[in-house]
Length: 344
Image (cartoon, helix red, strand yellow):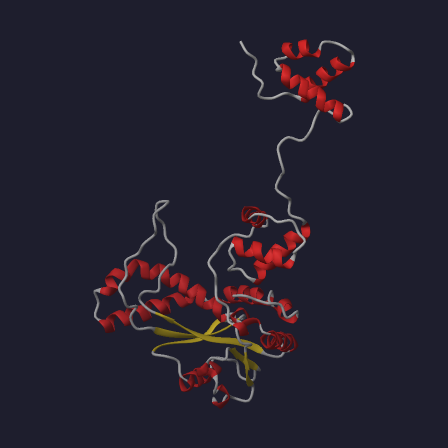
């Protein structure tokens, strides 16, 4: 049976070269261990050319490993241009580091995976969300909040809409199939719910109404909320700078009530957002159970039932939930002081 010459270990090469140096018949040795005569000649000849070295790296040129500088540059390119393709990243890498070795797009892909950088849906962020002006306003608000924490009872206010098609955004399907839900073309009329919440009481006051929020309606809400507070207690209403909130100074609130606007693009500093998330999560579950029956009701009855369900789910907005939301909001305070970029 002919020998198989697919692979020769370093030990066999060393034995043949040592046999040659001792003047022995290394060809006979090669035949015994299954190595061709011509291969034995090549092994000995090459060892003589390299001072007795018999083991050499196998294969041709290997892919150039990316240096730390190249790695940091690739990460910086992705940070600056998250929409770049691998080819575009590679091209920009050569522009920024013209003296660096060339690498392939597949190498860049592997490097990005190693840094846990993956493809995901792009989100458009307004330029002003993390502008220097906005970050300075966040820092000023955080400073004010810290300085007045012992003085005021902070009450956070906001409004959000709901309709009969308020629903879960995730579902189940067999792997490879899309999770599809059949809906009507229109969502129907919205109901707007306005919350006033704080840490001590949870939900201080709320209203539910049809139609959009107006300045007059919002100012009336502030007055109604002020009636729920303890007399003589200093209170500060905190809310965003939505258009309907722009005339809050005209609400004729009692002397112990103040108003404070949130910085723009800073919903993470308003615990009312957490209150809406809790209410919406509970409402989605209830609507999923009764939506089919609601669609068979006349419009007025349907809206009345929706309002009733929305009222029932306000119970989840309690003091424990708002205290947890306030602790979560405080986690953004150091980042606001440091004027960091914050994406929400």
